[in-house]
Image (cartoon, rainbow, N blue to C red; front, side, top):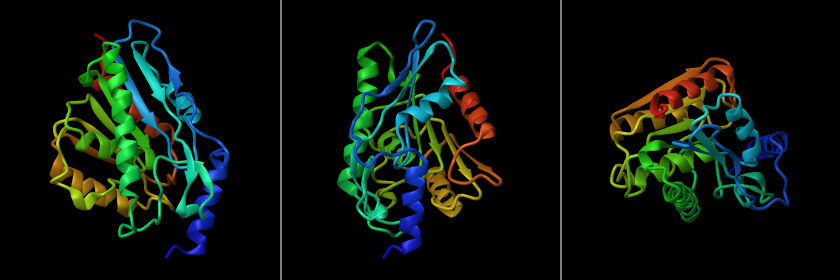
Length: 243
């Protein structure tokens, strides 16, 4: 059972991040390429957030040949936050590794990400020129979707302050992107997605993939900072060079 502290803490994080209890699905925030569009980054926000904040962050590190897509999840009741409605990719029932998981919701969100990838493919951007990623809950969707989709390979996966959901279904569930570079980042002072969750995820990913790196940031809580975004910028530039 969730403690009152867990519920209240997550609720205030939701408000701090600018969530709205009445918001619904909105059009993705898009930063279009300013040169010839040859690559795309699709990045999913965390619980209670929207695509706008991350679009601003990527706007500070953007490359001219890359298009950045930051969608916003539908608003739905979230068990972790006492049933309050907020932008969420799937329901979260608890903060411990053995908490019950919303398997249908996770898989539905994973399918949505695959649809966004397919839309970019229809515009002439191949999968090996697309990086997917996300922060916290969004990172969980990105990891699960990339590893379980039958298609591949992608150019890279960004996993910030996150975990691999439905981890007990692996390695059997892993179908693609075993050789896709993964940058996993985590704050050492994260009070919501504890560093131990990130370390357990890193250990599992190293058994599933061949190009995984895990970077920890001293003093960083459940957020991002300049150093992490510079690492993200370098990862994107390395795996989506101009062509």
